[in-house]
Image (cartoon, rainbow, N blue to C red; front, side, top):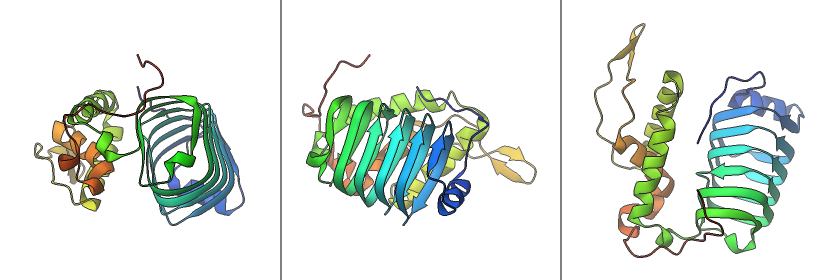
Length: 240
């Protein structure tokens, strides 16, 4: 279940990059959400005791990065490289790592759910000391039933959030749909009004959330790849 807080140590993407560029290498007790970072090299960073929500890292390189005691929801890494990357004692849900080159990467004592590593040398990633539920390493492992279940879980989580957060997520969903050339979901006309700008605070539609899920798998033609055959994903423990 995802949680959002207004914390004293919340930080936006611009502040995070500025602090990193100025030499700060440790971030703790921090809320990090709605990042979309591209073409950046990060080294010798420690992020601990924090919440990381809806953050994308595109074509980034990670070296000597440690993420410890964090709650992570919908954190994605696309087309990049990692060397000496460690997730320690993290609760991870909805993480996608795609087209990544790994060197000495470890998930230690993590609880990982509904996550995947695709098109990468995932066999070199040490997950032996973490528990996994619905953890995929190939798109062929994903069934249509998996997709439906993921959509329902996300809809339930997101609809619990306040208006401003829901609106941000809807904007992010549409951005991802555009990036992956996915069909635009059908939804009600936006009528929520604030000053001269109109926005929609209607509940997220099934189509929107499905678009959000498929954005993670868009490059793999999910509609063709998802079959009703028995899934072969890894499950190390029973998830309740």
